[in-house]
Each structure stands twice: as structure tokens, then as C-alpha cells.
Length: 148
Image 1 (cartoon, rainbow, N blue to C red):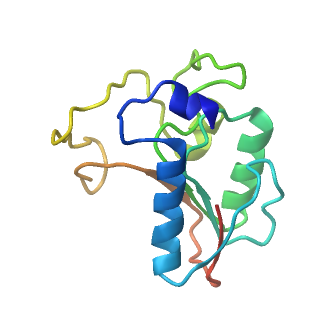
Image 2: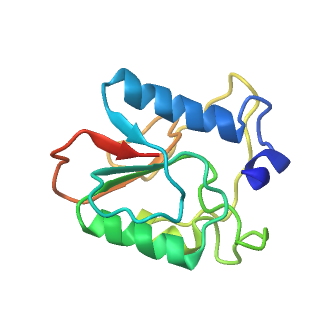
């Protein structure tokens, strides 16, 4: 939590703002939400949301990968795995231990001024203004219970 707020890329983007935004969206859809530790067991969850988890360990990445491979949808918010557990940036780019699961590496980034947008290229189909990374297993969710 401290790492997310220590170096904000936008004055409006805080750890709590991200968390409450995801929570509110899920609840507005009628999804029951369990708020648990980022290091908790994810067995049985169909949807895992990591709204602002900046420091991601190899153990967390392994647990999230197992959840996705087991059929869970994993939704990662901005700056997920932005830093190592020690607070440094990953030498091999953002997403560090999540790079294989996410299927991407981010080597350069910058924040945009309010009102400025940037389309993302390379996505099929193109995704204008992409704000989150979504990783999912091929089977659709069967329950409406999420972990945040």
C-alpha cells in the first residue's frame, strides 16, 4: 500500500481509490466480494482482483498463476508488480514474476496528463485507452464470488 502512494503517477490515483473503485464496481454488479490478504489461499475463487498490488513476490505470482490455471479470472490494476519486494523496479521490466502469466513486459512507461489518452497497439482487437491487464483461463466463471 505504501509503495503505491509513495510515488503517485496521478494525484487522483491512490491505493484506496483503486481498491474502492474495483470493490464498488463488483458490488454494483451484485458480486459478493471477500477482502483478503494478497498472500491468502485463492482456492475456490472464480475471480481474483488485484487492484493495487505494487510489490509482488515470486510466491504471490505462483499462487496467482495457479489460480488462473485452475480457471479463475485474474484482473490486475495499474502498476501491478511495478516493484520488487525490496522496492526496486524489475530489471526485466514491469510484471516481473507475473510476466509469463500476463504475457507482456513493460520496459518504458509514463503517466499522461489529465484528458490525454493513448491507444495501445498490438492488441487484437485494438483496445483504446487500456487501463487494466486481464488474464483468464479459457473456461467462464460459474459463481459470482470474488476476492479483492
